[in-house]
Length: 255
Ligand SMILES: Nc1ncnc2c1ncn2[C@@H]1O[C@H](COP(=O)(O)OP(=O)(O)OP(=O)(O)O)[C@@H](O)[C@H]1O
Image 1 (cartoon, rainbow, N blue to C red):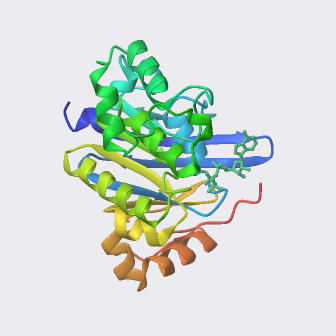
Image 2: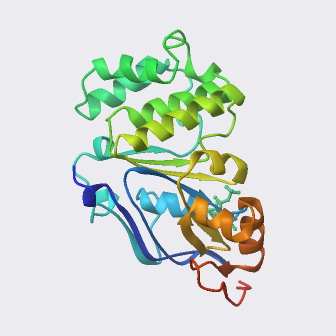
């Protein structure tokens, strides 16, 4: 897979739910070889954007493409893009191994890969337990295993840190960084700035559905003194950070 095939591109992406403009003409690119954090306060539009990237929601305008194609046009989606959206997105009566085997069988993925990913996320011992009884942290690990099942070049994860304990958070951070170091595209949302400061190389920050920054973690924290300061300043005023240029203030949307 070439770098272009692993690039996520969002252009003019817009989504409205009745009176709420959830995503507003959003544009950015996520490239391979780095962890890109997707930051924004609660309700900023992160999940909606990720759902549109993954073809689970239809944009009202604009488009999201992976390697130049819409998610729905991908020939072997699980092998190209791994997704983690919400924890516990599996049948509660099924064991972890049964869940992964069913997905592998339906997507032409060798059965041996199931044991591999269970090992990778530390669920080998719990593989035969009913997934419905998993703790939130274990469910997140199963979600990560599911995302990695097809050995995809692109990973899209919505708040994967949720429910993990400190050891789990460190484990996930190391895993995401190593996946990026292997040349994969890793796009991960969070509202935890401190965690993103440790995990991400680049940041796409949104506020009220609009892009407020698309830059490296180092540059953003250097410009504002700290990443927390940058996040709070940019998202509260919906100002746009443009590298060394002065921040540009947008009118706030009142929809
Ligand atoms: N299915 C829906 N129907 C109506 N409104 C929705 C729907 N999904 C999202 N919204 C609204 O769109 C906006 C963006 O929501 P979204 O979940 O994408 O934000 P988020 O950045 O992921 O937030 P959080 O960090 O709280 O998960 C919010 O105002 C939310 O209430």
